[in-house]
Length: 111
Image (cartoon, rainbow, N blue to C red):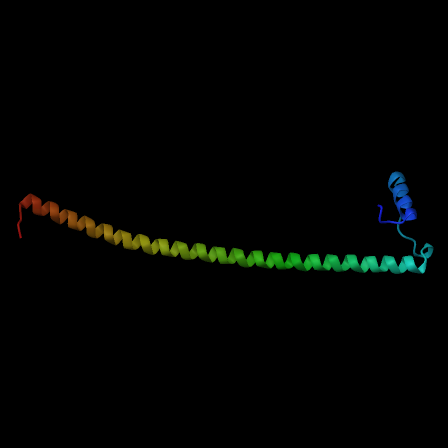
C-alpha cells in the first residue's frame, strides 16, 4: 500500500475494515478517475482475453499431444503383434527341429 497515495490507502483500509465497498458511482468520479477506471477495465479485459487465448492454445496442444501419444501406442501394439507372429514361427521351427532330432536319436539315424 506504500505505492498508493495516503488518501487511497486510507479509503482502502477503511473499506476493508468496515466492508463498505459499493459499486462505483460514475457521477461521483471526476474526469481523471473515470479515465483511470476505464483504462484499468480495458487492461483487465485484455488480460482476460490473453489468458483465454493461452488456455485455448494449451488445450489444443494437449489434444495434439494426446492424439500423437495414442498413435504411438497403436504403432507399438502393431509392432508387438508382428513380433509375436515372427516369434511364433521361430518357435514352431525350433519345435519341429527338436522333434526331428529326437526322432533321429530314437531311430539312430545317421546321415
